[in-house]
Image (tube, one colour):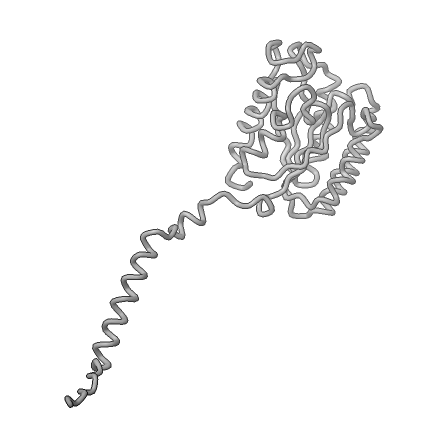
Length: 233
């Protein structure tokens, strides 16, 4: 009866070398399919990781007559990767009451619960017949409330949006009042000039509200004024 020869064990050093080769091969295979770290960092942030923004304004900021994603606040937010809550109300102003009985003061109250990183606020044609002293008092109060609640938020104000004809001096006065209030709390106030003047084709049939192309023109003008500030946004 033949004797069974004991199995020879591999030297420990050889076993370790083989294990290292197997591990290296497995890692190489993983590396071929894994996403690079740089690609991960370049991926778009999840919705809850996007900086939040609110828009306070009138029917033009609300996007009356166009899709929600075609309003100028939505276009600006999309350009910068902000998650937007558009609080604008048709017919409203710092003094003027909007269609649902709300003024800018009510919009500010809503904003206070949202903790925005960016606050877009527009002067409005709706206040052009209101008492300038009341506009000033309300604008100063509301901008102060926003700054006190959000000391690190970026406040970006814009001049009112007029139509194809010449802008009246009454809206110029509103622009001056709102601009002073925005600057007094360290915000940026953008003078848009007259992006729709002489361009009736950018307006809806009512001659007041921008159509989708008009909203894009307003957003483009805002972006042109924001360009020098982009590095700090």
